[in-house]
Length: 81
Image: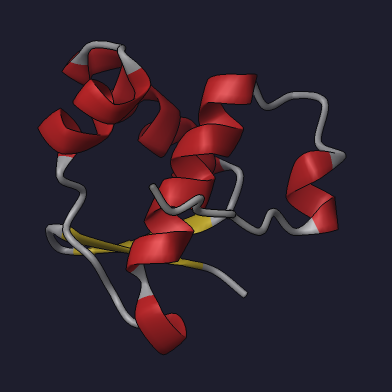
């Protein structure tokens, strides 16, 4: 079994208005966005990975977009640098 590690920028880590679930979703999406590219949200697979429902994923993604940590381009998401 291989162990996977995620990076979390300090400004995201220190934002006390984010929940732990917000941060975990941010890390998963950042991992899927290779070299600043976009990824589809894949709500169900993220929900399954974290053991939460799709509505929670949608809510966290909306929160991250509102706080300017993620950017939406149509259906796709990317991490704002």
